[in-house]
Each structure stands twice: as C-alpha cells, then as structure tokens.
Length: 102
Image (cartoon, rainbow, N blue to C red):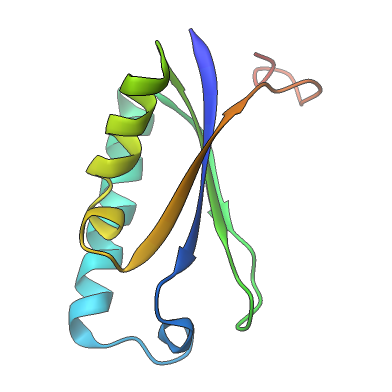
C-alpha cells in the first residue's frame, strides 16, 4: 500500500488564535476522523506545527492509489467544510523509529 501526505492550512489564519464555535466543532470532528483512521490502521501519524502564524498540519496515511488517497483527504470534516485548505502529496517514509518505516 502506498503512503500519502496531505498538508492542511487554516482557510482563515485568525482561526488558530480565535476560532469560532462552529470552527471549534468542525476541528473536533477533524480530530475524531483522524482517530478513526488510526483505529482502522490507515493513519501513520498526524499533527501540526505549534506557531500561531503560519501554522500547518500534516496527515501521513496509507491508501491504494491517488483516487483513494484523495477521497480520504476530502472526507476529512474540516477539509470538506472549508475550515482547512488541503493539498495531497505522494509520500514515503525513508527513516523512522521502529514501527514507522514504510
């Protein structure tokens, strides 16, 4: 199975420091979605940089092909709702701690 990465950035940069209640709800659904991907064995890792300005997140996961990878990215509730803007990239872990090699 191939590895993929999608990079996300907030569509509204101020959201990181001042999220609306709706954005908070959608980001919560985003985290729940990532946990579900992990529990199904699809997610390798996910996280975000800790800057307020210029922050971005990455999700590294496995999918059979680009169409399947794009479907996973687009099903992310925060991407689907437009809270995050996402870009998809083919990826391969080259060096990692035990258990993360691809």
